[in-house]
Image 1: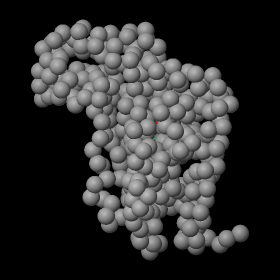
Image 2: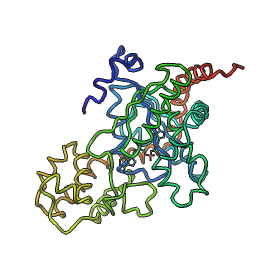
Image 3: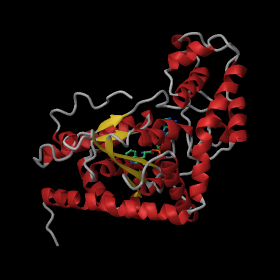
Image 4: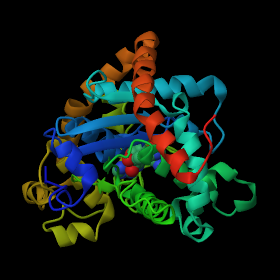
Amino acid sequence: MPDVTAGAAASNPHIARYQARGLKGRILSGVQPTGNLHLGNYLGAIRNFARLQSDYECLYCVVDMHAITVWQDPAQLGSQTREIASAFLAAGVDGRKHIIFNQSMVPEHAQLAWIFNCVARLGWMNRMTQFKEKAGKDRENVSLGLYAYPALMAADILIYKATHVPVGEDQKQHLELTRDIAIKFNNDYAAPDFFPVTEPLIFGAATRVMSLRDGTKKMSKSDPSDFSRINLTDDADAIAGKIRRAKTDPHPMPETASEAEKRPDADNLLGIYAALADMEKDAVIFEFAGKQFSEFKSALTELAVDKLGPVGAEMQRLMKDPGHVDTVLKDGAQRARAIAAPILEEVYRTVGFLKP
Ligand code: TYM
């Protein structure tokens, strides 16, 4: 894994505090409980969550308040929340050493988000591509929460003064906004270095996993076709069926990286293989150069079942034990609040709110 923090630390008081404890910083990241957790979420984010935990102090959050920016069935939201928490645990995150919790149990997120609504500028929000994509043509009819979403996301991160945020490529713009909010708050309130200017951690061979049905479209929870994604809870037969039906082109496997780049479906499958095998994509291209897709797809199926099977099985096991998952979340939320409450108090003082 590259040392993504190199260089940034020396002059950054927020990072220096962790370095004194032999750590590289504090991480916060989140995943929405909106169903259909997929391979993109796993390779782009959740697997990295587990891999970073020996070097950072980590908080991993199931962002249920973000989820309701679009309609969620109240009868499902609780089990969807537990499903994401189960995925964190199944991927190997240690919920005792680190913190796993759901957002709505820590009200300080929403309290800071309001202040950030007053820091962020409309012009900044209007540039958010994810809002434009999600709102589509029906902009008048989407929730105000969907528009304000990135300010809540900034609050998720900065209520812990987190220094680093592991995410997939699609969250990059939201993290740039988080940095802008931190800088503007620090300037407006003449509080230099109050909030850290957070570093994104986007790494691995699959930072943007594409749909299995269309290599130019992101793999997504909301794609109506289940064949577009591999869900973390898919069994071996489902994984095999989806890879068999994954879109390819009529040519043999690409021979070079530049050829692969021009063939998005092939490039996507090669990236998935590389990420699952922990190989460089170039090495995978070399191994399968000129071979038939059928041969590559068999190897990919075997690899995917081997790597994802145990994670899916552990998730299923945990989901049958909601009491245990609820305990992890509740305990995590208590520890998260212990960090967030004093930071919110400092923010309130800085803003000039009177204390009760
Ligand atoms: P969400 O729930 O859409 O996705 C969770 C994580 O999965 C990554 N991801 C992908 N990575 C690679 N390829 C894909 N096709 C793919 N699809 C999703 C996302 O980049 C993300 O890391 N806004 C966030 C949730 C959030 C958050 C936060 C993240 C709320 N507050 C604070 C970090 C810090 C979201 O909607 O992720």
